[in-house]
Every structure is written in C-alpha cells, then in structure tokens.
Length: 266
Image (spheres, rainbow, N blue to C red):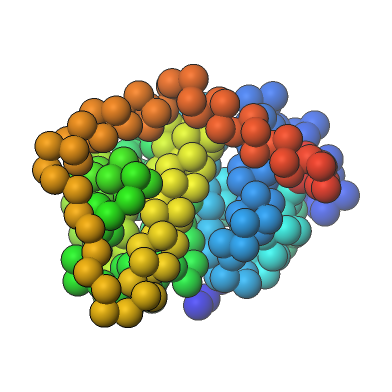
C-alpha cells in the first residue's frame, strides 16, 4: 500500500488554523472528530483506512488522513489537503497519504460534488457481509432502513489502479452507501455528520447480521415486502442529509467523544 508524498512541505511549526479559512477549519474539526469517533467505536484497521471531506471553495481540494497516523492521533491540524489530481497541497506531517485512499476518494469527490464527505472502513462485520453473495439482508430494522439504497462494487484488488475509479463511480451511481465486495464499507454524505450517521447505521446493520448468522443453522425471519416498503418510507426522513435527525445524532456523538477526548479540535 504505497504512499503519496508531498514536496515541498509546509513547515511543521506553521499554525494550520491561521492559514486556512474559517469554513475549512470547521470541516477539519468535524472530520477529525469522525476519525476519533471511529476509533472510539473500534472501526479502525490500524492505519489502513481513510475518511475524507471536501474543502469548501472552488479549488476542488479534499482532506484526508496522513499515512501512518492512527485514527486516535488525527486532529484538525494534521489532516492532509490534496487535489483531485493527487497533488498534495498541504501536508503538515510530511507523511504523505495512502495511495489507495487517494484512488477511492478522488473518484467519488470528482464525480459526486453533492457528497461532501466520504468514509471507508475495514471492520470485521462490514467485510464479512461484503463477502456474502446476498450482501446486506433485510433482517433488522437497521438493515431495512438501507433497503434500496446500497450499491455494490466488485473486488479488483488493492485500489491502486486509477482506471478502477470509473467502475467505482459507475457502481455507486446516485447512491451514497456502498458495500465494496471482499473489502469493506463506504458511505458518503452532504456533510461529515451525515456521512457518519449513515456509517453508524450500516456498521450496526452488518454487526446484527453477522450475529444472527452466528447462531448456525437457524432460519432467519424476513419481514414481508409491504413492511420493508413501509420502513423504507419511514427511514427517508431520518436519512435525509439536511434533516434534524443528523444534527441530533452528531451532537450526541460529540458529547460522548468529549467526555474523554477534546484533542481532535487542535
């Protein structure tokens, strides 16, 4: 898993907050919080997965983690800024970024300007469901809420080939939730908060499915189609990026995080 390096480097001593816009700093703080929350929920795979967020403004830059930092080491100041062509604009750590992360995130940010944040995980339960032929099953309230909203992308190996971006975007289509076969989960959102809410629900749905299947040769109950359709309709408001549920969900997560961790804001 190669790294994209940056030249020339910004001096590490430079205060990042002083050289970015207030709008960018706000996004940095929220993205750093998402990393810390993922660590809190144990959704990490050491240093090998990545969350990103689009930088406000016309430049089409996005923020992503420095390759080598653990999720609980990410803060607003050490995020790396990169453009869609892979040129690193600002890298306070000098560590560069994971090239596979660049391939995946640049593809989506380039094709879907409506998605301001993209989150990708390699959790045990997420990968387990991604390896199942039928994918996410409508066996829980959590999973049914995603009914009709999940895209699938076939495994092509570690995402180091730029031409995979075309197929990744085609498979995503107009959706914002994707299961990467034999690989993991991905969610996008109109904000960091929205993307994280979707990831939270998807991770939970996968965990429930794996737990239900762990009982062995026990027949699973599938709700009737009319019930699934009812829940799909009920879930629309909750999953809407600009709905009050997103802020309520995020604010509760931040309260939980800040009981033990406020360093992400630095």
